[in-house]
Length: 248
Image 1 (tube, one colour):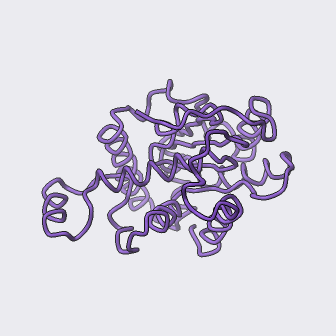
Image 2: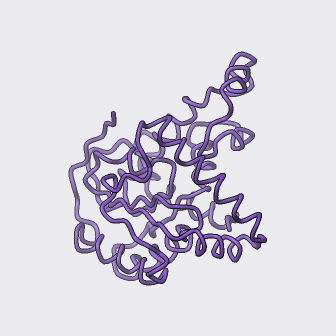
């Protein structure tokens, strides 16, 4: 679940990273001092739980002081709105899917909100900035594609069987079986459309990721450990790395 405490942790991360510079331009660093992780997921594969366990695992094994490893999932929307000085009412227009085209056009014409493409670009900019600074776990939003030119980022996809994912959604969100199945279909379809429409990539393409992990066969603790150990082996606790700052 997403709480005010989770968002405050994200704000604390940003403050600790950029307080010295005093503005968002500090995010445009040419060098990365820490690794970052992106997690793509099938709905119900446990990305939120794995992300939280992974952050705790890495905090315990990668000393160096603040900021702590921080998970950005749905709270990323709030960070984008703050980062780009946008009204909070726009949050409902920023899911991993697009509004129907006619609604998007009418909203733009009437000045109700920016077009979806502009919102996606702002999300991508914030994701890129966070990944450049490191010690973040970025869940969804095309983060694996957005950050593909940064050599400090590990990309992971989590998958699972339909049955296990339905059970996980029921438990995590307190839904009945029918609601859980509808929730999974809607979210999985939306995420596929989002990545295809805005980034021209197929979310199931294994070549987008360093690893694809089946959470049917691996407990969440083991998934977090596998990802965490890979990060520590590949990048160390925070070895500076040259980071290209652009994206296609």
